[in-house]
Amino acid sequence: MEFKDRHILLGITGGIAAYKSVELLRLLKKAGADVHVAMTEAALQFVGRTTFEVLSENCVLTNLWKDTASSVTHIDIATSIDAAIIAPATANFIGKYAHGIADDALLTTLLAVTSPVMICPSMNTDMYQNIRVQRNLDILEQDGIHILDPDDGVLACKTVGAGRLPDPWFIFDRLCKLLTPKDLVGRQILVTAGPTIEAIDPVRYVSNHSSGKMGYAIAEAAEQRGARVTLISGPVSLDPPVGVECIFVESCEQMAAAVFSHLAAADIIVKVAAVADYRPIDPGTRKIKKNQASKEITIAMTENMDILNRIGELKTDRQFLVGFAAETNDLEKHALAKIKKKNLDMIAANLVGTGDSGFKTNTNKVKLFFKDGSSKDIPLMDKHKVAHILLDTIIEQTG
Ligand code: PMT
Image 1: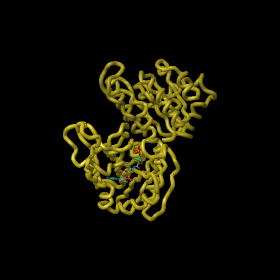
Image 2: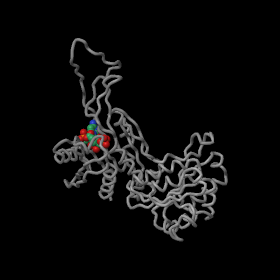
Image 3: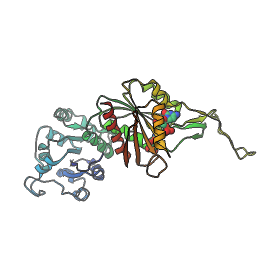
Image 4: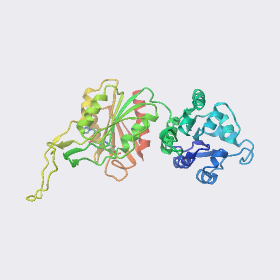
């Protein structure tokens, strides 16, 4: 998600996990956000103000009497931000915030905030589970404050249990979700992504260059927009998108089985996976040995099921089916042929082999084609942005 023109208040309270807030700030800045940092006196015991000032390119607010350009700086910040994120949030902070106490710059600023607030509790497990802390968290939740549960793990105090501040990328991801309009609530989306691999023998396989980036971007964007998402993925080296049901498969046969067991529940199906069209007929159970007598080897292949084609035959009127087409030439001709043959509602045709579009790249150049022959050009852009435009278009088409 882009944070360009977004203003964020990053509140940091005094816990050992305060060092992770540096990385969170870096992620926010990288996404284009204007970030104002407010730190408690205790937070300053863990991480220096200078680090946050340099990275945020803004003055850090710690003291209402000393750090402010005007007597109402905290109000200016509170009224200009799109969201506030408090990471880490200590038991002390949670207790005071739940009861409207405003005895430092961060708490005072937060009382004037009307935009969404997310807090990330982080502390020793017994402290976190303490009935008073839980009661205070309940109060905040009932007041509409978003609570990001801490992770389980080994804590700084060597306790093993709940209380770890989640990784900065995860906090960033959940903040993105908080700020994303929820226009897919109530929709169930099935996405396939990545390549399939078809065994030749126990150590070798036939596959393709799909990295999963395009499909994962669609699954992630749909989840952030409120959809329930199932992602069926071939082998890739990406982290599973947060909040998405992920099913990992290898071959076309396994992908087909997973797709057909989830098909009935789906309202929208987006088939991004690069499925192998053929598989070795008889994958050996032993490694094929080098043949000294011949320099050539022939592997007999047979056609795989065309999963998309079969979905097109089975789909009901309430289901919206989107295919992808990876083409090196004659994009329009091939895309229009596929939309008809496979009974699709829409196809996203992308050029492959251009260096900045298609397999493995972070960007993609896509043209969308519809059943009635019309089309929509999407300029070359980041796959995450393509994902949002694709979802915008699906919403337009499905009403
Ligand atoms: O994963 P990335 O590195 O980000 O790359 C993204 C991508 C280039 C893989 C993606 O944008 C894309 O184009 N995916 C479709 C690739 C493909 O297999 O195209 P195709 O023209 O061969 O297949 C057309 C459609 O039929 C696809 O929706 C495919 O999922 C489906 N198909 C194909 C063969 C088969 N046996 N079963 C299928 O369901």
